[in-house]
Image (cartoon, rainbow over the protein chains, first blue to last red):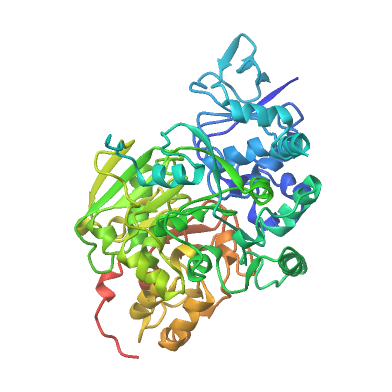
Length: 160
Length: 429
């Protein structure tokens, strides 16, 4: 499924992804304000299949997993970044949101048509493919199951 | 007998928790969790639906500690409802519950439950605070916490260690907070690379436990998974004072010659008080180099900057002095225990005499919660850990970070100020 690239810079923090002001509400309310501080139209214009592309340390800050959940709720196919903050990275995988590291994102433009292929490990753009670092095996398995909860269900079912 | 290879403190703790002789950096291992800390925001309201979905209970209720701090004091309908749900869950699941006693990262050590060498997870990003006690403690999100509560296990990529050594001693008026702002400035907010940072050196060994907690707390701002300090007599004495037990801590250290990712050496004696400009802790500079910056709000709060010693230091500067015209000072002591001690020693009276507003023992505006959020265009200086855009209020507000001493001095002067001229001046109330 292809979508459009939403391009962001370095150090996108969890207060941008899930503003504290809306944390007492449900994920719908949080998602509606996702990234509004730096890109007010984001939540309104992002469509299922779109890809968030960013620089280094994406998701730094809080452990609130609504930061990853908001992107998933908005239908984002995944986040490709030069690097991720550790807790955000774990949260995203746990919630079944693909997070992929790319060493070189030069030439990726905002609004470009893109297709995030986790299996092949590349972000395909018209005329080029950006290689992505392969996920560790344990995380690949968890993502394939749809996140930590379905992964644990499988495990509990197997041992029942 | 073959000599054991030199290993880091992080490796020793993780190997033990994984039931292994040794582990190597980069390995993915599954570890048994010794203690899990959760709070009212990411805790019951988020984990219970997942436990129900999985159809399981807690792996060990005795190893779970619940602390309410985010929605305290429950001054909105939704906040009050979340607190009620939290209280009911504590009863139903039979877990230790510290309700309204302060911020989890301060209340957990006060409870005496931390012990050097433990593998601990916390449902909050400032969970590395536990590393001050020589525990491998790190923050996780709610879904992952539900997984821990269901299984007692978690996966870890064994970290490399970044040794941060501070030689000599800090000068008067310079605190652990200044060390952390300087480190954020020098290494950047991803300088920790989600590995283990270990603080070492004479300046660190000389610090009290509350100061060490500030260092480990802000390992989060360095982007490290954990912020460790080798346990010593100071650790053992603190734990004994809160009814805890340091256990067998002597061997919990990084061996000489253990492989490190990096070894940074700094001179603590040369460190000046720091302040970090909006909107990142990495925008740190010595206060002496910051151009005149008027402030309207001064905030002493959070697990990072409102513990007993923070309050004591700030009050020593404020005693007998007045706030600059137009400056509002708020103080939110990090825990009830810290506030009670400050009360008994006349420290809270100093804040009250200065006209400070005393706020609940909770995360409050540091986490963007509560009724005191910063308004449009407000310029503030805060003893908290983070000054991301919009975190503490309006997106147009501008938050500077400093030590509690720097916040107090700035409140008196009305602009960002060096606390050192206010030390030992002996202003009389």
